[in-house]
Image (tube, rainbow, N blue to C red):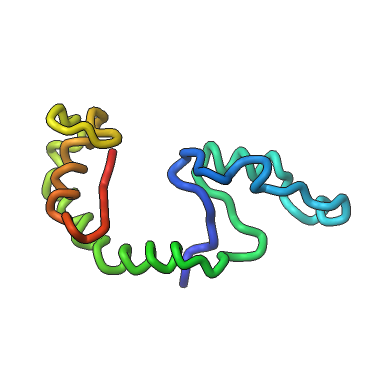
Length: 122
């Protein structure tokens, strides 16, 4: 069974999200829809929000799903292989998040997947 449609990314504010992206419902619809403030809370604190109309047919979504099907198992396997280094930052790289815990392992995985169109960051 497919996961419910969501928007957002790991609790980080994505471009185009926020009050403008979550249009206020009409007074009639407001009685049956979750409160906009609750949707904003979900997006910013939980990292996702259910889309009322279901998941749109975005080409970017199909691209991300193809990459997930193709590489997820391999990425998880590599992450598990380097579990002992999960809390280490990477002081040799300037990539986003390199200095954070997970930075070293993220660089290793990205290096192994070079040319695949995937970049892993901490």
